[in-house]
Length: 313
Image 1 (cartoon, rainbow, N blue to C red):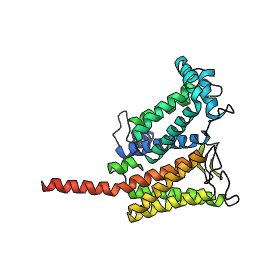
Image 2 (tube, rainbow, N blue to C red; image 1 turned 135 degrees about the vertical axis):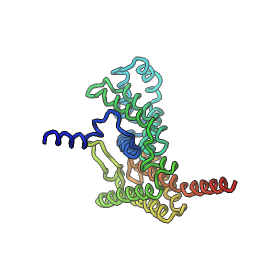
Image 3 (cartoon, rainbow, N blue to C red; image 1 turned 90 degrees about the horizontal axis):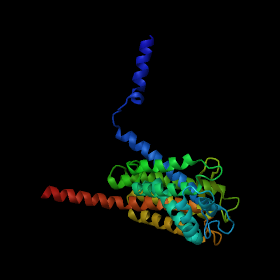
Image 4 (cartoon, helix red, strand yellow; image 1 turned 90 degrees about the vertical axis):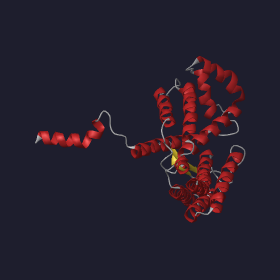
């Protein structure tokens, strides 16, 4: 009996104990996609507190505070010198660079778009953050080693093959499926925000969808922002289900305009959409998916035409 139990256990756990397990491309692609999405959610949450126009410089908090840690608690002397003499004197410009880079990371990783490029940017940003804050009080240096390592994995992985626009471009992911997933997510987020915003429909900042305890957020939207988000989702859904390009183009344009309007107003005046930088990234995610899914049919048609030409020859 003991030997049979041991045999059964080895059979069940053989894949975990095998020193050279066989390749399972599908399982690996799913695992890499999960890692990609987790990293995307991390950056999506972190863009929320990068606030223009001075990014905390006037109050000595926010991004300015954490960047100045590179000088106050130096990890690497040359980086501390660069921060003190080149970055802090022009800090608002640096703040915009960080905001753009981290927004791009959230959008590219969550949508699975040019994942290897995003991983390179994420690796550089992880190293820069680590060199700024790793030795500061209440920081854990290993967090930044792990951030850098996770992005390094994505550089060498096909992480956009599953539920990513890279997969749509490569022909491994259905554009219809990807479009429907993002349409459903966008409509759901908009609908929840719409209901939650009814108590104060035109607030300068709508109710936040997320919490600081798990460090997870999908943005904030007032009544107008919720309606616009739902409209983007509906246009995306109509476009992918009908294979019509016009609704997809409209979804992309509306998403970009919503994101631009938020960044143009945040820190300067109350945003019409009642959102934050995370909200802008969510609008951009839907816009990127609509744009690339909208191009997928024409790409497929060109491939079919090319194949017919080759067969004729």
